[in-house]
Length: 268
Image (cartoon, rainbow, N blue to C red):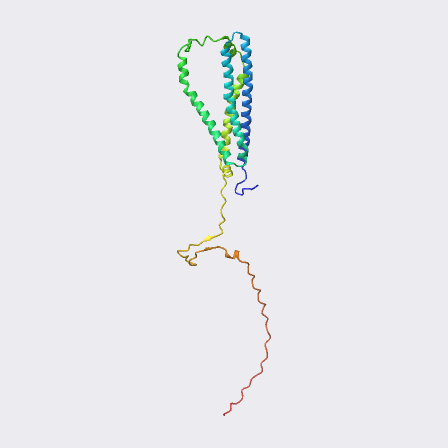
């Protein structure tokens, strides 16, 4: 195993972001399981009401079952896909994978864009709601059947209080908001400068031990140097031992010299 010496230690922001991803995955898996449980419960309710009414239209019963399956897929499939997305990228994010961090950014941006589209779509439907309110009490569709003349099956199905369905729809909205907030918090933590340096470490720097002198024009002090010179040449040669100090000088006693006498000069 090779260790990247340039990667700094994992900051606390990355660890917190990883655990937040795990929490979001747990919420999404719980929502998917709740959607499946609600589908089974609502299908049993459809069977119970159809047996209670007796004269229920088979087409209406079939449409309700198909709508139940469609609603379950509409809630469960996106929750399961997002849970897999965040779960797969959690450990690579903890280990410093920049690609996994980009995938987390994409997940957060997709959720935010979807939430904004739903909000804008709700505002766009307001004129249609006001237009329907101004038509009167009886709304007649193309087949000429009034909405006031509902069948006994639909009336009994939607009139009976269903606590499980209310809990399911409320949990869906709260879970979606919680996962959106958690994902945006993860994106913010992974975008901070300490986390960015952890995911994008600096490349290794070459040692600046050599220095090049230009060959032309010549250096004003040492002349033209067309080769590389080390700023500390003594590092490449063995140390030369210093010469031993000279022995201390000792005072010598003066030597006696015989006296010299000058005689009379003689003429040749």
